Image 1 (cartoon, one colour):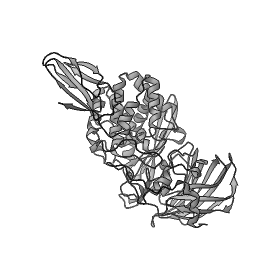
Image 2: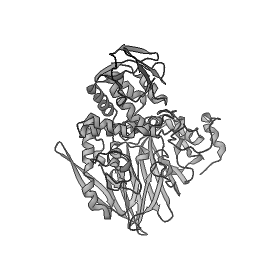
Image 3: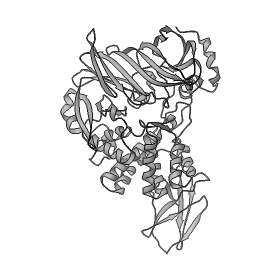
Image 4: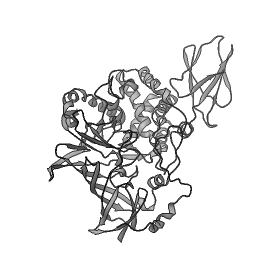
Length: 554
């Protein structure tokens, strides 16, 4: 039963007077949003969240598409990391909790914003495996602009039939099912049983285990994920789907790929989706093995652009490299669908190697966009093509806020600079290191060693330091923790070339490459002018296509 809000005093130890009550969008482009009470409750791992580790979710939901409502229950299995009599689970405040049970008995609970405090009847001892079940219903949040502003998309296909999907990165899985909603918390496995009208199919992550016909013309589709998975990656798609089967052969092993599209798109998908195999081969070459073959790999047609749902990548780019929804804004050189490479690449960046806090989400997005430049470099065996791709996105960088913001505040740093500037910063770091064998070893080892794990910006630069023997803290501080683009101010006389850094931290000591009469020369600018001798009328070019800097000719 629900108990009075007086009991919320139990969590008074993490009240902050400065927290606002207004809602906060994630990913503001021009400012770091003000912290709200709800985002504090979701972002901070207080004692009522850090005291247990979720091992398994059993998700059971019945969809009423006409009413755009859900009714279900979720059993959460966990291990206690301390003695527990109270814990926090998370569920959107607009959804109704019918009851919460533990050991076949109802338990009391209270709610504040999206936090649900559960009060067990007896203390759960440390190192105990336990479970509890949340029964709930309601109308979940609808998506305003999926996937950037997420929730449920309730739509119709071309034949005016129901077509439903969910996307919730940033908003959190709690908008449609109860869980411990923090990016660092992943269960070891998940069972999903989604009940839908019998004229529709329900497609989710992992492998399809069973299809059970129910009363009232409904059918339950049971899916199972046998790997750790981010909560926001757990998904459901409902529609008139048909399977499009394919295989991926690696070292004499056949892996099965079971894509799902609307029935009238089966033929085009059969001819279009095989390009995903080339994408997987590229990512395995540079970033290590695909981690989810026991859960499969599939593309699922969706009524929005797409999302990197683990082992169930949603796709809505119109089956066109040139004329898709996203195609006109990304240079793909006619060789790959931008949505397929971007969202499938997240099976490495984000799904396998996951940010420990959403403020480090550049590890998902910046590395992903950078990897696309590497794909073109590899595809055409041409470094300039990779640079051209990066130049095509450079104008979108705004330099208004740092790529990395505050931790423990549920701050999903999904602004544009996380993507585009993050990619350019990686390109810049490659240039600064100036040794491609070391650079590619950094990328692959970082991904392989942290597969199915959680990392931070500092973890990435620890790997950089390990492989180069150089401390790049100055680089990280400049490019990730300030919004400032370093400026190389320069001028030349008949006999000297002068240069220095502006708009940079005092400790910024990045090397810079110049072309002096066509010959590459590396310099080490400081905050004060330095110079070197040149011939009269020398032609000197700042190699700003290798570094994210702004040349300023005095």
